[in-house]
Length: 458
Image (tube, helix red, strand yellow):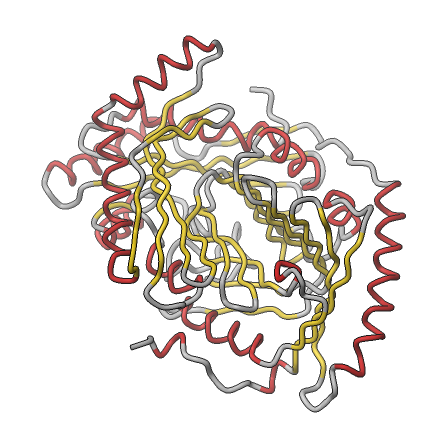
């Protein structure tokens, strides 16, 4: 029987009625589109294969939720929003309206100064949306109209507005220059190695005592600049150097942005088809081919890393089995990024029922790759040991389409920026064999992508 949280609900008139119109376009780059939207709410998503990319500007609808039912609340409101949507030009279906946003790492998240504008669940439907699939692009406009108004009577006006917007963006894109980020003034690490060592030792003592099998612990760095953080050079750097990651931007208020390039897919759902991955166990890359192969072999043979990876893959399997009619988990292989490589197991399956993406996100988050095992005990230990709230670090970020399908990444290799400051985070999976020194070095490796993107030469 389908959960009540995911049944269709009556349309709530407080939204008005969503009208979405799309036209094909040429000569508009994502760089130009996002650059022209400076000073507006912005969003961006690009798949690791770069075949599919979205960007949004402005806000047509904003959804937020708090409390223990935040996933169900967003699912209900998204279903409600899309229930009577009038979508024109949505062929292929990728061009249709979609919500962008995500969730905090913890359900009891209370925004602090760093995360002051983010709700525990926060999504935006952009006013304008640019979509690229296999090199072809469309521009979409989303707006709300009174429920009693005839949407067909407004389509021609929206198409006129779209054509004018396309012309403006084509012109603006030709004159756009990407200013380099101002030099990084400082990177401040609030946690000393002595604090880290004490935290790791407390965690391994709990593991040896049989309280849990694994916990993921994180530390943070604060970056300070001479001027406000410039997002476009950062996104261009990540697109160039981390094209094999899921790149994202969620900027619900101008100059308050969460962004990154994550290698980890939390869930992708299209109808009954699902995809996720087990990603755990890490080592650096070698500067020469021989060194790189040696490090790859060390990672594949490492008992500690294989144990960490096995916990992640096994728990994902256990959570998905009740929901799926088939499930395939590949044996561990290597996912090689610019400066780090991970043990990686693609996971694919078929759902028993079409429940939408958010049912899977709620089931899987947090995976043992970012939380631990058992989940509840690991989450309590993270709360007790980590001195700085994670906010949205390690949490689900992605998009939801009009079918309630979508795609979410785990927001690692990420940063949150406010004006002239940014905060980045890095974590390590702690198991019985973990040593503070090696885990400290692993987090240093994981800081590198975002430090380099922000202009650090260290």
